[in-house]
Amino acid sequence: MLKLKIRQNLIECGTDEAGRGCLAGPVTAAAVILPDNFTNTILTDSKQLTEKKRILLREIIKNEALSFGVAHVMMKKIDEINILNASILGMHHSIKKLNPKPEFIAIDGNKFKPYGKIPYECVIKGDAKYLHIAAASILAKTTRDDFMVKIHEEFPMYNWKQNKGYPTKEHRAAIKKYGITKYHRLSFRLLAEE
Image 1 (cartoon, rainbow, N blue to C red):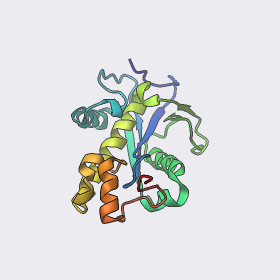
Image 2: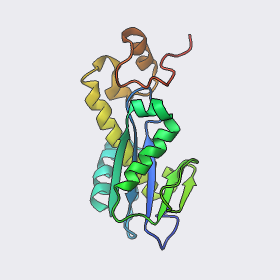
Image 3: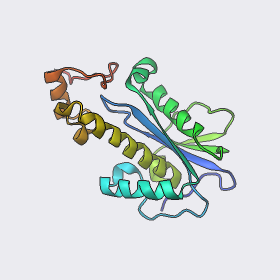
């Protein structure tokens, strides 16, 4: 059973990102504040859920959250500041959209940079431990997937609607055959080692 939050008496948001390991597309982050009476038995780390369940949960989260924010950090910025900094920047952008302002931030993973003076805690595998981080992982993943499906129509040969920009054999074979697009991250190793 996932816990609601770390600090029971504070307005606390959970934040997570999706798409860190992808070769194409943005890294997308989300932040969510859930009400203190929130419960859900299927909500967990988005990677453990089917697409159908993620889409169902997205609607529940959007309807029941006190506040949520989602932000893309695009490829050029990722190449400029590296993927870790881009992930943290995305989290900062999504936290900025929250109202009320959180008094505590719970982050999935082990790296973060202070956001203003708000205290925070990094939680390894936090999306499988806390409901608000899991909720953020769902919003980040589904929003990013929607983006990848949309740009798939522009460049169908990379099959992004299926691989979502991750380094699958098929995606790498398409890069080798067709070259790179404006959506590829140039700072990443786009082709597998020969």
